[in-house]
Length: 248
Ligand code: SF4
Ligand code: SF4
Image 1 (cartoon, rainbow, N blue to C red):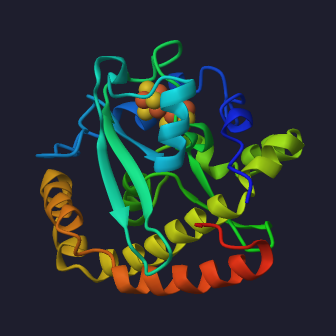
Image 2 (image 1 turned 180 degrees about the vertical axis):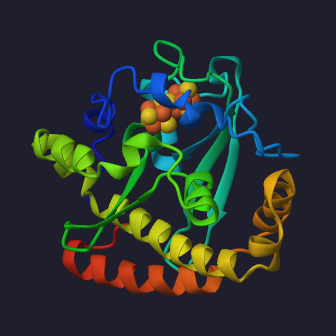
């Protein structure tokens, strides 16, 4: 199978509304919610966490600039999810304190390009839904009933960006990216249900809520990993029938 066309994906801004930070103070890059005072996760107006797919990270290390000081030999944390397929799905995560000033310093990860949306593609390449692009956004929406990013209400923004960029749209429908998007969908489905079932969801508020949430989330108590793995095995089998093994 051909590799993901990262060159096309990273040559386009995707969702981009000039000056949008003026109306929201740049929540996406600063996590500047007054109650988000975490012990370990970046937040409280000082920055956020960026996520790369491992394949994307390796491509960017060779062709762009990732946030890890790789020129000086830096490496960032590798996370692996073994769902029982031929190889695990792997991600990199890194704190980003650039507060939106990343142009000419690093190459924005795909997730920063699609923010505030994370598209989920079906095995046929059709968009199934647009999820929130970050776990903090998804949590705020459930807890406070509002989107932290004002652009999130305008899903047409993302759909129009894809319509006007057929090459980019094709690149995003690569079977590997379909598989990853389905991993996020299964993760989010399980997460939303467990979050609402967690005692602290209703009983805690303000900073106590977010600090309690941080422990639950980092302690991996808010996602049923086996449910995510089962969904992925099913999707991987379907994609493999259509396209050959996406993870070979
Ligand atoms: S949170 Fe949304 S509106 Fe605010 S800067 Fe980020 S993308 Fe723009
Ligand atoms: S890489 Fe850029 S867009 Fe992404 S979180 Fe950092 S400053 Fe924001």
